[in-house]
Image 1 (cartoon, rainbow, N blue to C red):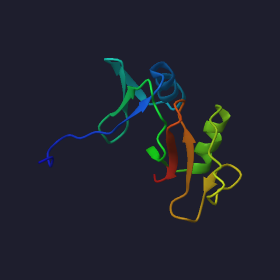
Image 2: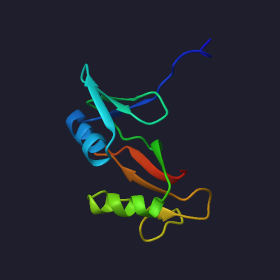
Image 3: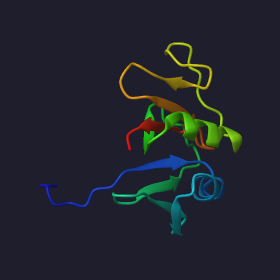
Length: 123
């Protein structure tokens, strides 16, 4: 039924202007806005829809992964811009919040709405 449907993903936020600034200005994604929603134009895929929700509850799992050639370099660059990385006590993370040796090298952080994002070894 959906074999040829151009599906796309999306997630909610509680503040569209804050999300636009975070994804566009801080992360450097191309962001378009229409009908009170954002579209994140990511490489190699359909845009991701970001929509407002007044009773937004942050996702409890990763909503968006950014493959990078150098996770530690990405963590350092984002940290320099005020991004805080997760340091979940139940995971084997180093002092920067990077998990190594248990699958791909990865580090998690949150958008202004509390949704979980990652930089993951992949380029």
